[in-house]
Image 1: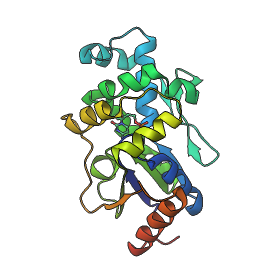
Image 2 (image 1 turned 135 degrees about the vertical axis):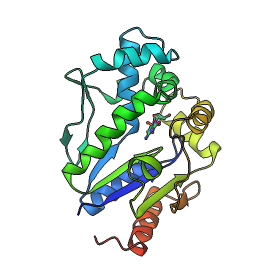
Image 3 (image 1 turned 30 degrees about the vertical axis):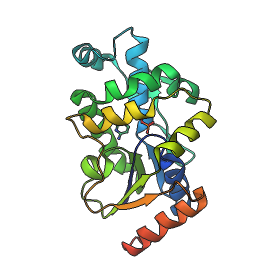
Image 4 (image 1 turned 180 degrees about the vertical axis):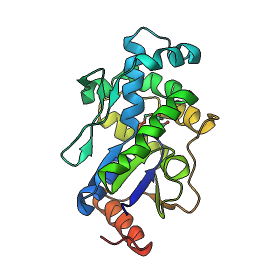
Length: 214
Ligand code: DC
């Protein structure tokens, strides 16, 4: 049976970097679900739709062709037959709109189905906001990564991105449809004051204690 390691946490908490390295160590496929919501947001903006207009977002969904091809041990996002670049996925416009698109229940239903289907690839490390609470709630391997608001904001500044983290967190935690929560039974790791390597070791140790055979 393939294993799924779920890694959730707020924006810029370091969860993607940690999850990517954990996946590499274990030889599992890395899945970043934030990029899936970012790809849909790109599609919405590209079609001239107001991301705050939920009905208009729902209406455009059938026209979005979305795939997650795998290479280099991780899934990528392909939209309408084109691979999206990191610059497109992390543009200021997408940062500002992604939480609005991600709170639309129909968007979530579609992406959660795609995320669950990725188990066909074998064992996964999947990161996001609702992976341990909604996508794979039965996984015994749940991690929640946090960092102080100050540390998270300074990481984003270092990446040269405009990103209103506090506002994104507010919308992500307050939405009705699968909000960001610490999943039941998750191990909480705060990486504000430790290195990336130390955080990865703590995650591997927690998984080991939970009986993950690596
Ligand atoms: O991890 P990220 O910052 O790239 O995620 C971008 C946005 O996508 C985040 O603000 C909320 C949404 N998201 C979500 O709602 N559920 C997930 N599993 C992953 C991301």
